[in-house]
Length: 138
Length: 111
Image (cartoon, rainbow over all chains, first blue to last red; front, side):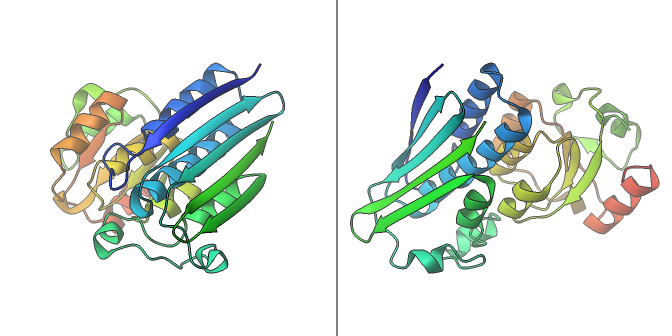
């Protein structure tokens, strides 16, 4: 096997955020991946989609399914995160009040991604962008 | 209790009956922080939330919830109802508050 998909996520597009995660979930179900692993991937993917919509200038989600491992990459074109350690702290958030009123911006997105993935790497440069790589062992 | 059985109780109104099924309500969950709910709610749950925007449908689909219950007749956005219908997620409205809904579900044997 060996399968990949790419999804664009636009900045500020909260209404359709979730589409990519649903398509990824459907594809993984078709591939016969166990539902427990799919749930973790779907949660991490949705958090990623919302993060791209809320915080980034726009970006992409890239899914790579290979024997033994699923990789989910999030890549955006800015604005980047000034202090990644702080951003990884549960409860820390820079989300606006309007985003918080929607039940987002609780400062749990990145920790949720890390907790659901088997491997988690984040690199970010202010003014350049953020890249996250999550792996899920099958 | 099955999701479509909730319609037998006048205090629960389903806003999208075409999404109803005989899916079992396995358990319940209450929460309004979407990340928290996604991380902790179990599949098959009835989710009680005061959030009414379209993203609750995405959360319900990803977690594979049985239904969403909106307390205190909070007004639902049209977009949410349309999306939930497309995705087959029943949404109920009730005058009960979140605590009363949970107590009622518990009394019906849902743990």
